[in-house]
Image (cartoon, one colour):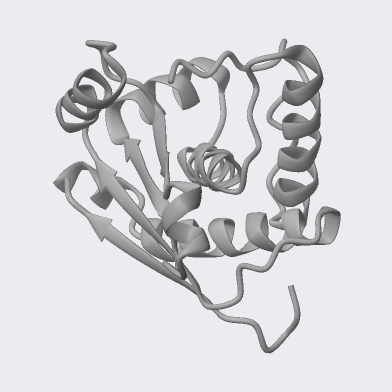
Length: 172
């Protein structure tokens, strides 16, 4: 990503629980931009002028999204909704939407002994990489995605989320 490129990140804090991380909006914006820069360093994709929307919500809202859009009736940590290729090919600058649930993020961070802010950065990077075409359904793709997450997070000063554990099984 060149220095003159522009990516607009819109963060909506929907749940009051996010006050536990006062810098959540700024942290998410930095993580999203870093993930875009990391992906651009690996692939020739043009996302200059792109837009990404992030909703910081709660378990109830993300459970509804997960049920309505994915047929899975449970809360999860992060969901990504990429804009369809057809719309993007037609000039739509919106890359997609990301939703992150506070309670699930908090439970996972506490269970893994990680700062909430670090886990938030990880989930924002993870969600953004999904919008950019990364996936983790098969082992090879999962390894590629985790490697990019590690690279981006290291640049943000976030410790390797996979260092002392098996790869995190995303529940989305």
